[in-house]
Image 1 (cartoon, helix red, strand yellow):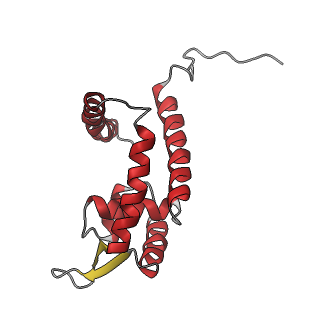
Image 2 (cartoon, rainbow, N blue to C red):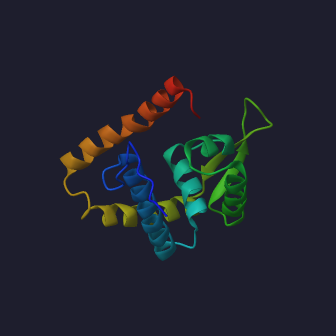
Image 3 (cartoon, rainbow, N blue to C red):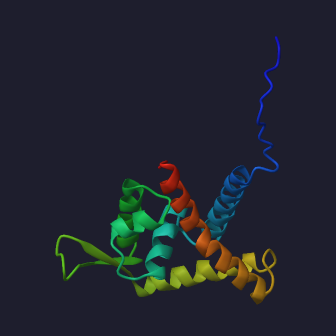
Length: 156
C-alpha cells in the first residue's frame, strides 16, 4: 500500500484553527470542572446564567444567539434555572409573547461565586492587568473578523 502525499500539507502544530479548537475544548473542560466544583450547575445552565448576568433582560433567543448552544438546550437550561429559583421570567412589555430573563438574588449569588472562582483560576494563567486588557481588546475583534471573512467567502 502506498502512502498518499499532499501538495499542501497542514501541520496541526502550526495550524491556528486547529489550535483554537483544541484551546476551546480545554477551556470548556476547565470551565465545566470549575462550575461543578463551585455550584450545582452544569455547563449549559452556567452559560445561560452568565449570559443573563452579562445583559439582564435578554430573551432566550438572544441567549441562543450569543452562546454556543442550540434553542433546545437553552430552553431546558432556562426552565431548570427558573425552577431552581436562579432566574425569573417577565413578559416583554413591548411584545407580550416574548419573555425577558433576569437573575434572582439567589442567581446573582450563584453567578458571583462561580465567576470569582473562574477569575481566580485565570489569574496564574493570564497575569497582569495590562496583559488581560490587551488580550480582551484583541479577542473582542476576532470573532467579528471571522464572521466577516466567512461572509466574503460565502460559507456559513
